[in-house]
Length: 82
Image 1 (cartoon, rainbow, N blue to C red):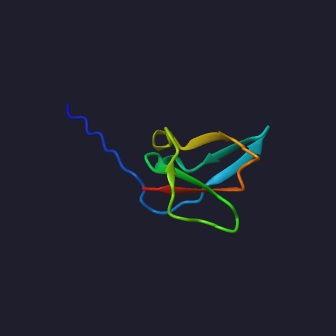
Image 2: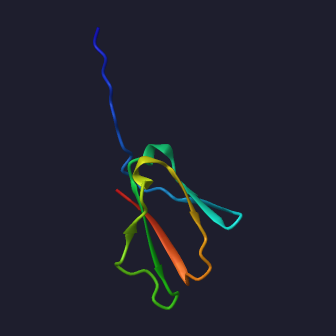
Image 3: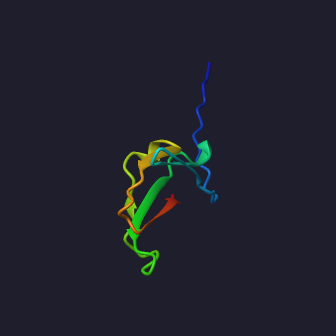
């Protein structure tokens, strides 16, 4: 008997879905994008998106992350990269 296990990662772009509950932000994406890395950066709106992206710890092993909302941050940007 032969067992073949195939692993694959979808390399096409996808949208992040978000929800806010009790000062927590939930970000999720399709399960076929598990293995992708969620990245974030905090800048003021006048600065916008820059090059200082930071990996969100543990996000490459899941398709859902919950982060606390910090009202002192001017703005926070998220992206999903592979």
